[in-house]
Length: 265
Image 1 (tube, rainbow, N blue to C red):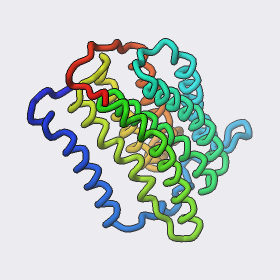
Image 2: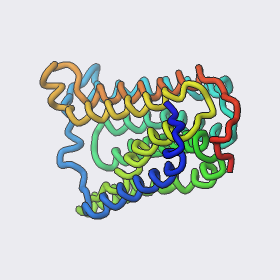
Image 3: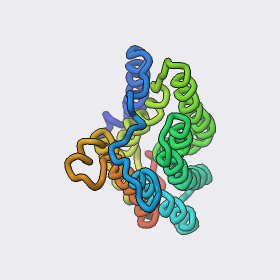
């Protein structure tokens, strides 16, 4: 999937910066974005064996299993640098905590519990982004930016919650934490040389997540259509597929010979 054309190599960093600038500028110009009214009212409210909102709670189980499995398999993965090791370890910790945070939220959905759902999600996002950044662009920059990105992503969730409780909800910083990596990672994967085989699987991770977001948006429609499982439940399963894709990639990939395209500084 890597594009070797000289034109793209010459202007790729400019393209990434431009995309970040346009995204941040567009969100700023748009003005505050409150959380959608009724967001916590999911379509499937059914209980099972006394467990409230059973579908949305139980569909978090794959995150727990995949997070633990990823952590257990860490020593077998092909990982070259310490910052990549830290980022992938953090990713699987985040996935594991996402299972717990999301289950806690869906037992009795409200904004306070949603904050504890979103915190590990943003942490996982930043860890994934850092791993790709370290592999494709610069280990040093990834190492320097890792902690600030994690702190900022956590702050966006807390900022959203505080503004929401004051009646002036603003999701823009939180949206940016999810949107910018989703926009940048495909470009990083296609414009910068890989250090490992199976790089195309990273694109599949992005596609699984985007598909999950689509089903999330049609939560009620899908539940009305089939009467058994809702769009939000399917969203959990598709997002878990993205995590499974990460594990599959790390299990199967092999290191490539170092080339002049990779920046170690």
